[in-house]
Length: 70
Image 1: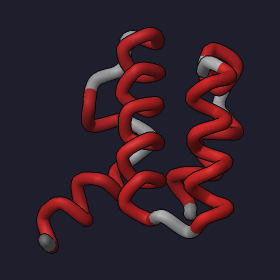
Image 2 (image 1 turned 90 degrees about the vertical axis):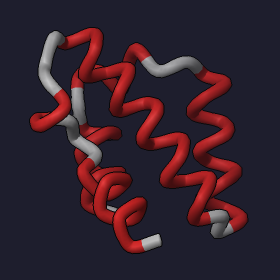
Image 3 (image 1 turned 180 degrees about the vertical axis):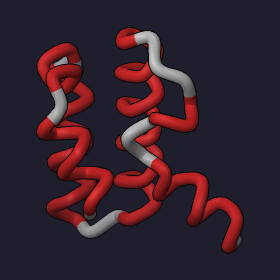
């Protein structure tokens, strides 16, 4: 949830397409955790690439943590 708050509070959030925001909203409404993680990771990676930050500063460390648990 923290990663989602960082993503939606970032200035890069404005660059996310309406389609991606709609997909995220639908995933949140349905409780589809894997879709939420996938979408926020893709959005975060895109935002990091646009801002020129490296992966260590990505706003979505949750994806890395969950992928290691599986």
